[in-house]
Length: 488
Image 1 (cartoon, helix red, strand yellow):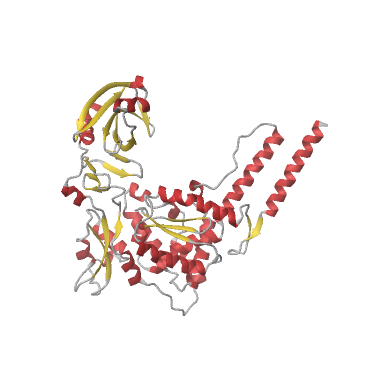
Image 2: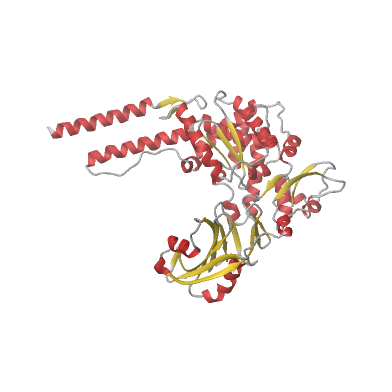
């Protein structure tokens, strides 16, 4: 009797699984193909709405430029009206991030970063990026991923019943991490084809995508390994340029005039922030400035620095020294030592000393244990520095135990260099901008690039930003041409 009930349960679950798979396959209005979709359009809209604030927080907030926001939204809405889902409520957001990135959430939420806007050279190029992201929404790629993951977990549940062993699983749900993970190559190609269709209907030059991705490829080649990581992995999964060319040739009708709107676009992005913003902190020469939080510190020129959203990493190439700078919120009335003991094991703190840094109370302490960071052993000294509004700045100094004595004075100097900004530093700590200028008589890329407010690879960056051939750097540019310059 028990065996019969067991078999009936298995058969019931298998039939349910099969029916769910069949019933969930619906014809996609954009691709014309049947897709495995469990989420309704209303559920997709709700997911996008719930994740929208998280995306904004993760990527540094919304870039505050109402004119530019209105301009990008007008481009997006124009393309959306020529897509296969013109009736949903589309939302286009510029994120205050220097990373070159673009992505979309279910329900019509499309995001581009100011880093990406700085790289584009005309309206058709940015239209191609937005069209591609709109296509991911209309093709319901995120929803399809969710459906496949969910049914896969149901299959595991069935397996656990048949085998008789519990398999711990959770039904997959769309989250920020899931949405932002790269789509498959076939999904990217599908979004390319749909995106080109949408921008052609919107009268934009469909070769804008080729120009933009070619420029992105050139930029990647001149950046350091860490800087390359700032180029979104989403773009690294895009099909090769030759595939994009083939798609364009298949899709573009002949003898039709398409529009680029270069002047309109460059005018719109004039004075856009380039690189880190004041809200994220600015790195110049061997200093880190944060105007909004009113502090700065100095690090040696032979160190490298990475400005993350919630921390700053400073290190030597060999990683014998790694410094992590971040902040804590303290409770009023709690001493720095009590704060330290609440975070670290009290028994591990062996050396503790009070001091003042820029007239602010501070402590440093060592630990009697070796800690692990990125798989390596380190001795750790920690500085905690009181600041206004119950904020505490923290320097975690990680040193190779075998040669810590050699580097200890140097890293102590970094931590103790923290100070409030001087009047001059408030000027020096301002972000850089993209300035649109008109070329003068006899201007060449070589001449103009020397005026760029960057230290390395001025000519390469000037040519990439402006879509110019590096091999023609001594060619005279047409007088009155609009070009991008990086300025302070």
